[in-house]
Length: 176
Image (tube, rainbow, N blue to C red; front, top):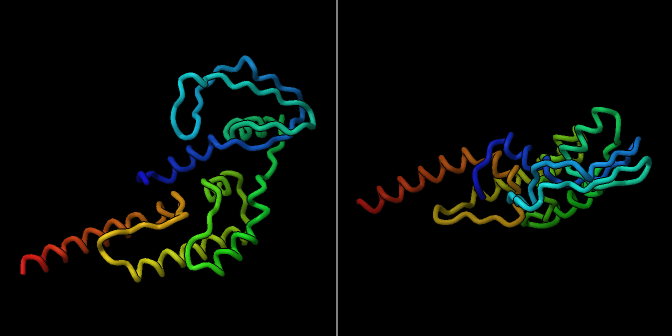
């Protein structure tokens, strides 16, 4: 997992496709823009082929949806996964390991300004599992399933410092 800054994580989340409902008709078939496909730049996919119709759902990148929403041309529909936060919380509370959540779940919640106490509770549950796991950490390997980049970014500095200290202790033990 590459080390990314919070701003870089937000920028990656801006490429996620979201559903919008048009307030007007917008034809973006001639729009030539740089875009990414699955986190890698694809030179062959520089054309967006979107038509937004009044009161009909369309799927467009989050950054474009935000731009059009500011101009009062679309309404962004909250992604379905944010209606399932209770299910995520229940799975986090019952399982010892992390439950799987959609990629960029927390970043999109920040971008869309979804200030729900349930999302905060999910963050706290997952962070609690992280810290509990770090208490039992051995210094050789760290592998965590269903760990998001947002969560890694929250603890990366602590992890790198702990790892450096454990390597130092190991080398001192070997020297004795």
